[in-house]
Image (cartoon, rainbow, N blue to C red):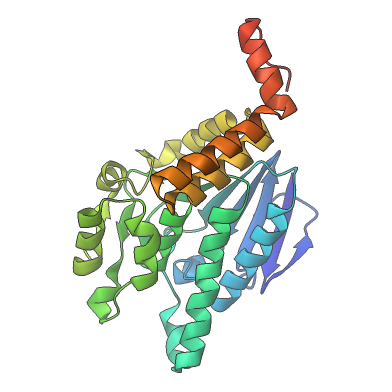
Length: 277
């Protein structure tokens, strides 16, 4: 098991697997077998997405994307909250259009990387996930939350419509459910988030890690190549018309079928034996 603390986009290997206590380490990486756990580590600030935290996340996601030994990623958080969104104090420190454009571009790049990387990404949510924190949940491929977690895109309450969170939110929820959250800034509970499609499941807090590990086990037991190809296809086809989507899906499936893992899996099914992956 590897443990890394990350500050402002660079990492150093730690000698043990204990959580990093230093408040200067905004992101902690813990590798558990083939799964990379990325822990947002600003608990005193409710894990708000400071510029340093966004840089650290981007650095780790880029590193993981090119690492074939990592089969899945979990985005988790230290403390009582998952993520309270952007760091408003930091934003007010430099009230300039260029600075805000750079900040939201940086955040959008992180969200797009979550979608484009070949590994499935699961959000492990406890406490609150608000504004860009709710965006982070929506941008992950899967999400499991404690049943006492709450979600909101509450920028409108401050006069700031959550435009960037609206992008993944509107691609996960129905239009009217997404618009209700965006227009009112109201919180929804974990059960409503599950029913509306923002998360996959909610469980008692004591069972959160068990549920995450069970989901991970089902994912990493599948061939890496099939998972990577399927994830890439899933998001690309969403932006296409039906005919183009079917063309891309057919080509992807044909190439997948030529992979050794698919040939072995189909052969094993026909021969009524477990696949030898």
